[in-house]
Amino acid sequence: MQLNHLTLESLLFGMIFIIQLEGTNQWKGPGTTPNLENIIMGRCYDYIETVNPSVGNKNCSAIWEAFKSAFVSKDPCSVFPSDYEHYINLTSHAIPINKSLFWENNKQLVHRLSDRGNRYMSLGDTLMGWLIDNLYFCGTSSHSGFNYTSCPITSECEHNAEESFWRLASVTYAKYSYGEIQIMLNGSTPGGAFPIPSFLADFEIPNFQKDKVSSINIWVMDEIDGVNVDSCGKNSTATLESILSHGGFSYSCHDNYRPVRILQCVDFPAHPACSSNSGSEFTSSWMTMIPVWISVFINYLNSH
Image (cartoon, rainbow, N blue to C red):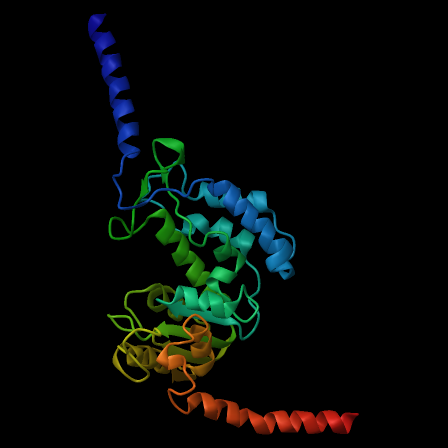
């Protein structure tokens, strides 16, 4: 009888130890974002009511349940892209023609350019990406809740909750993109503007639909205060151009594309690269618009 009692105590102690172990910092990534459900539900209603009402009515409660069920009560290293298929199906919507914007290593600039989907619609501007952007999440096999202490990163295990989610979202976004596609790269990235492996190289470009994509524009943007590591036709950017060429895609490449550079200069107006005295590019760009303005003005007068 005493032996059975000790055995029961040992089992209970072992269970408590395992639960406590899963709550320690065993992983290198941040734990689940606090108030995750409230954040996603709030973002959902905000998106369908004010950000992009054109997506129509979406069941935000069902979307949350589909997302949560993809990884809770599971080993955090055994969550696969297919686990998010129901969530992707519930959040999917059309991407406007000519508005797809892909990127690597310049997320903040991309989101400023896209302007919440008004100029372009990056993955983070779609409903499936909007709800999850900048959040951390994982579950645990020991209970049905979330791990708020730590979550695995890809170097620790490939099939973690976050990596698997963004893989499927990236594949879906690429397949839904059509018309003229934009790709923005960071020419100041030490390893090169087009990293391999990357989401762009591994999950997005391979899923471009040849019959839907009319052309591709590559913008290689250096940081305002960064060095030029990569540019069109050189280094890793040349690899990207080769991949697109062999894929039969029509493309063009632009270094420090002026409209995007002007957007960068909003935060650095005094930087030499943003000064009108730094060269003739600003002046020439404005001068080339004068004939257009004159033509518009003449047409206006003729019409009145």
